[in-house]
Length: 353
Image (tube, rainbow, N blue to C red; front, top):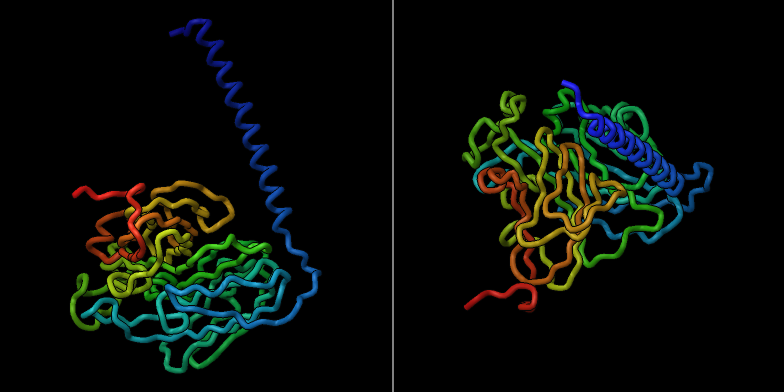
């Protein structure tokens, strides 16, 4: 069938317009990319202005914002500890950890810093471990330099070249098993000018766990590799335990405050649909990078990825933070809470009597 001449001309015009738009978009993206690269470039010849020891914190706590604005040598030391802990109230699991908790210690550095990193493996560990930090430009993210047997340690240095929120994890084979046992955490690389000030910062990290017993089965439950391969998680958790940050353990904030959440997803398998029930994210630093989206209801966090979300709190009550792949929240443990205290704000939300 032959198309009418007018239609063919219109089609040709649409294709030309689309092509021009694509070229313009590509050019803008490249220009933006070049501009971003210029503004984040690190002068590798700039002298370091002293040595500091990194403050390391357990979730949900976050190290204090950095007060220096010139590159330092930053000393970081982590110890791998294999230990039995509760995965729920009546269930225990043998976790492999960076620092004795799941997730591992939160690390905060500045772009341009030289990080002197030491990884230790506790003497009573059963297997070799290492660390792959996604903030590293180098072989294996540091994994090749840090294969440590029980009772041993290893050291390497890396220059922090790009700002963002990055995952770290164990990359010893089988990699999936090490991650599934809880070996992951976050390293924040602040931009040179720092992050905008907020009232509170918290650290949450999602992970999926695979056990021989069902969800909250009693007793010590071993890892189930077959379930992990099939991606049939028994638990999907924030900060390594059912109800780790709910009820009496809920995060605390007040009406009128701005809250920033550093959220990671260790995986090893599942993508997170991160959502706050009863709030909207004012800002989302997408995938933990520099691009910012606004007024977001739910943001995706890939396995091995992260996001920084900020929200202003208008009314009191309990905010449920969930993976909106919703059966994970109500049947596998993927719920955290922020308890917001303060005066009612009927201009924003009012209950009918």
